[in-house]
Amino acid sequence: MRIKAAVVQEKGSHFELKDDVELAPMQADDLQIHMVASGICHSDEALRKGDAEIGYPIVLGHEGSGIVEKVGPEVKNFKPGDHVVLSFYGCGDCDNCLQGKPTQCLNYAANNLSGVRPDGSAHFTEDGHDVADMFDQSSFTTTTIVRERNAVKVPKDLDLRKLGPLGCGYVTGSGTVLNTLKPKPGQTIAVFGTGAVGLAAMMAGKISGCTTVIAVDVVDSRLALAKELGATDVINSKTDNAVEKIKSLTNGHGVDFAVDTTGVTQVMEDSIQALAQGGTTATIAVTPNHIDLDTWNDLCVDDRSIIGVNMGDSIPQIDIPRLIRFYKAGMFDFDKTEKFYDFDQINEANADSGSGKTIKPVLVIDPSYEPGK
Image 1 (cartoon, rainbow, N blue to C red):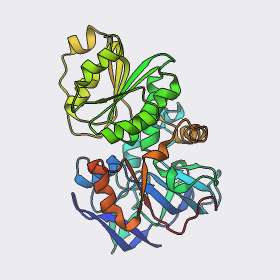
Image 2 (spheres, rainbow, N blue to C red):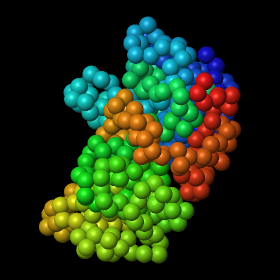
Image 3 (cartoon, rainbow, N blue to C red):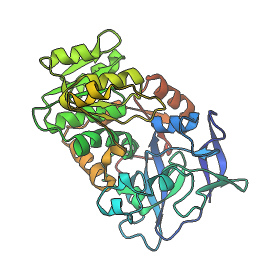
């Protein structure tokens, strides 16, 4: 089947919209998805630039939303016409998946970051040559095929154009707090970086009952939105010392939890220094940067912890519907971070994401889509 897709031909090159990409035939447990929209994530940019590599040429995109067109004979939970959000693929068979930990799937890298389908076949080809995929999904396309475990059914009365980023950015930030850190009511949290992931983590801190929710960034407009979305305090770390300010806001103790979404060495180190005794920092950025630690003073003496979290330790089929319930209740206004772009504006949208001009760009792939229909 011939489709339109945004292809990155080689490391660092721009996206090229191409009409001659061939989509692989469906397999028994596949869904064929008519793509409505897709968010652009910093992970897409990391792969485009080559900070992390799968292979080139590649079709990126992993925050897709769309409508099921066809289902394979072994598909049990979906039918044509269902509205879905796409997320990562967990094999469902390894020890970690069977324990309900698909983000720790023992085959996670092979299934999501190898550039090929779980059985080793090519997802896409062009002129007879293989084109790599991402997350067994590649949502920067007009049509894609995914495995049943890639998809999460969502209500048809919601605007599909808004929902795609629930599959990665929003579930990663919120899941880091709700599933991993698990703050108790009355505890404190600071979030470093108020992009989509950071704002999701911040809103999750509020939902969890944290009475002090501190947002740290260098862009005043983002901090203003953080305040609107529930931050009790905001810090512009360009003009204020974030660690000192956080200590002053917490009676000199520091915060119980911190989340770093920036991947910037100094900021990651600040997130650790801002912790209270016994506090925990979660680092969740895709970054090539390293941090320098004095393990005795930074960790042992104050009994602090640093953890990495993949995809918010989420189970998409559970966590995404939960976020939608929060959204409907007015507790998780993720759509306030979004801005729509036409599919052919993909390079502009990606640049706006990188510069911070837009928090969460969303590509509208099907401009004829009407919400609620």
